[in-house]
Length: 304
Image 1 (cartoon, rainbow, N blue to C red):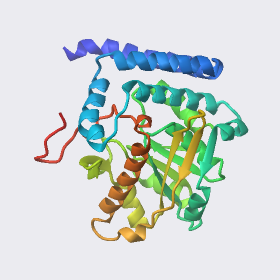
Image 2 (image 1 turned 120 degrees about the vertical axis):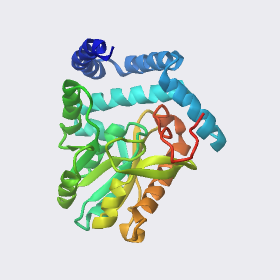
Image 3 (image 1 turned 90 degrees about the horizontal axis):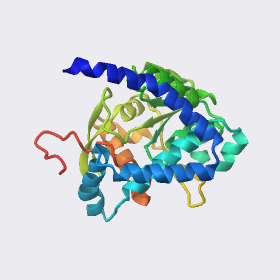
């Protein structure tokens, strides 16, 4: 019966906070070589387990990657994700100089130009590379910075994550809340980061092609941009071969070019195409275990 699961769920939530404390301690105190070894071991174990995530990766390899002439190693996907988590926590406790040495930025002039209009900028990115490092990198350019994200199920663990996200002056906004806080931040001429590469509940979405297959994609950011004339700046971060990170800020998209009733859909399609390009350049840095193509348009068969 469902009520029998509640004590186990409550226990899991009570353990979330101590687990987060241990993760933060380990990430900040262990030698980097040991953290890399731990990530390699954990990724190997995760790839070997017959899990739902691994079934999704396998489905995406058959239906998306191989038809596109690409492939990924599940172990590499997990290793990148675990290393990114370690690096986010580790660098959150380091100085700005140490952070700047680990994260280099290209295209800063594109964001500065977008913000010169005084309307803020909607910065579109994806769960690619160590994406949690992006807000601080943008803030170090001297811009007021916000990030729209999902609140976790555990209040204690969510508070710890939010503390890490906001400890360097970043403004965190709940994606399930109204658009008013986002608009207020944009009116303060902030760079507001939003990820649109997942099938996300509780946000306005529509089916837009991604790797040639309709995928339910958040369209709220594009709608805001078109309605209020806010420039849209695509940007992403990737791990380099030497272990450092490169944040690439691309030229802003002018929302004036997407007028009309379907303008927000055309803009979202353009953004999906840009994100697809990042993933094609190094598919192992994207999280292929998310149900990106799970919900289908009416009459459209699911992936097998």
